[in-house]
Length: 120
Image 1 (cartoon, rainbow, N blue to C red):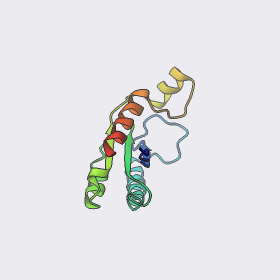
Image 2 (cartoon, rainbow, N blue to C red):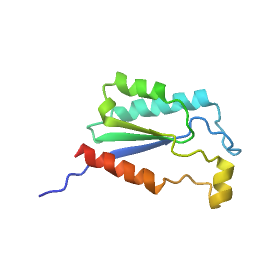
Image 3 (cartoon, helix red, strand yellow):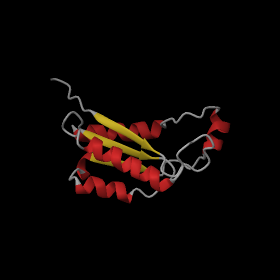
Image 4 (tube, helix red, strand yellow):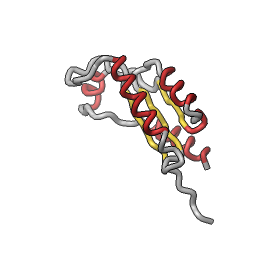
């Protein structure tokens, strides 16, 4: 038995960055369009070489435009959106962890792996 190898792209987003004093691009509308462009590009890679995309949006922003992009490309069954998994501001994260880098929670990793298993 050979193992099936799936190639998923994990895209993370912060459309509405909130309290991020060192961030240069903070306009949510501009950021949403940036993510839409990136998602549109990466959708062209499904089946060449990607099997799917997991799109994670951090601070509870509306991703309906991004969902429309996916639906218009006929890829709704190949893209999973994960939203609202945390409400911690940038300052709270730094204060709590001492680290300003984004990290993915173990719960999110388990969910992502279960989605990967469903593709097999």
